[in-house]
Length: 227
Image (tube, one colour):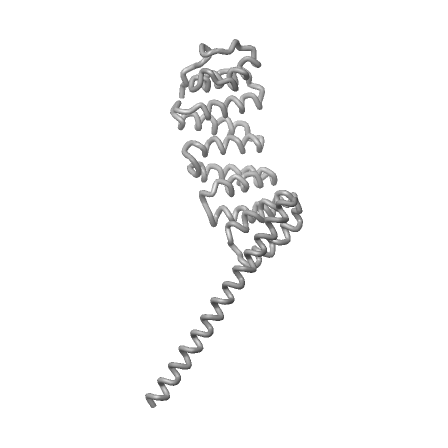
């Protein structure tokens, strides 16, 4: 009886090894197939064949659902093809799978602007304001709010960027100056350019802009930031 039990055990272990080997081989085969799809999709993208890239990435996502990389790449291709609502869906999945990825976050923001979902856009940007390099969240919020035509929200975001920056960088002042120019507020543009000049009094870029606005350029135009 003991011999029979031993034989059964040996047969069971043998089958387990074979099946395990089959599973491993199958996994390797599937991985190689997906790698091949990724390469083909990359080639299609490089050649500007967005429909081919779309077909390949769709197949990839069907085979491996919830791959953050594939969901992102498919969403980007859909944006190229004008499939904005589909892009929102895939880019949202990619962002949920990989929060903190700024490339994915900004692609999703672009898609939300494209479909006119301003509520979703602002919710996303406010919830992710701490993602990315320090101080970048409010600048990002201001940029996409401007793209979406939400000018009050954009002004508020740039103001918060300045406050949170605590006068340590020219970047939020330049962003506010750019925003002011986009809405035709010349006084605000000049004032924020002068704040930005404080950080680099010899900046040719800032001095050229001030000159174009009728100011006599030079270090004396620099204003110590108020925040």
